[in-house]
Image (cartoon, rainbow, N blue to C red; front, side, top):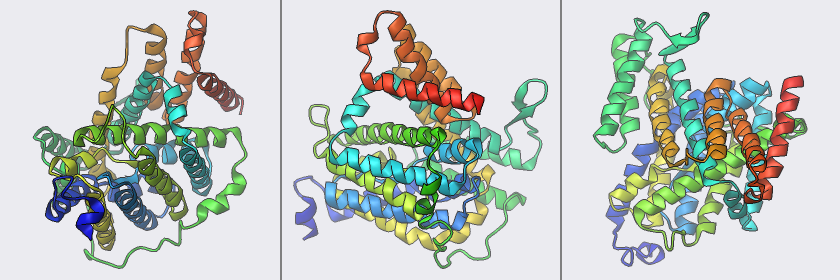
Length: 434
């Protein structure tokens, strides 16, 4: 039955191979179970509830991907967009996290409708590829900066605004150790390098007394009560231009994140036909369900994970790989006590490594085309300097159509870009006078 449903023979794979692939993908992205509660916890959310929400929605969306789309792609709350949720929307805009979840919920509904009516591709295609690369690279710099700051590598400086922190502190030394270990594992192409680096850093922290040992390893699954359904209660506060921009940004980042990860993983597995992914609609539907369901459970937007390529690399070829990955996420929910050892110093290396990977997209930008180069540069630089992903996107989306107009190339810009530019101009004006 399993053989027939997933077409294992036709895809030259076996149940055992798919099992190993599913486990490999899980180990490669399991860090999100601990990093996501740490990031969203900064916004005041209950870490235990976020842990459960993260594992559940990763399992649900990934298993849906496997059963419906029959692809070995995994889905979970995205690293980067969760930072936008916590630091830009909640802490930056000063809104309640319940309202931010409501914005994710609305984005999820729109995401789902756009997928149903096949409009997602139109919007994605309206935005220049180089700006998409700039957004990914900018988010990479932003989350790497968060990692450096959380780990004490950099700190505020009254003379230079920012500078190196006190590297003699044990907590900072632990972060440096974790960065070097994780970098080394990644450089040697060790499967699950980020997760293994996180574990090694946590153990080192226990040894030097910077991390407190948990009283138990396995426990009952943390309750979802603190976050479940809070997105619905936050809908009443969705009315300001700031929240409109938050909704648009959630949509844009999720668009590019998912599209980039799906294409990357699909290319690694040889699934692309004429540079397109067959049955892409079903894969995108899994992502839409993840975003919508995640907001109701209590977590930031989901995205397809490029780490799926690690499972593909060891032979994963069908949705059975995703089913196994989803099952592992469910089993992992019993290990919530380990959250106590995952401090900001332990998660910092993961943020920095993912930042390095995302920054790789900057190489595809045409830096010889000044209108594009200027917009991309401001997008990338604007995110870490303003401590806001949406502000960086706003700068790029305002400058690009403006420069294209003044250079007589306005017809090359899609009308949707002009519309987004106007929205972001209004956002920046309100931000400055409000």
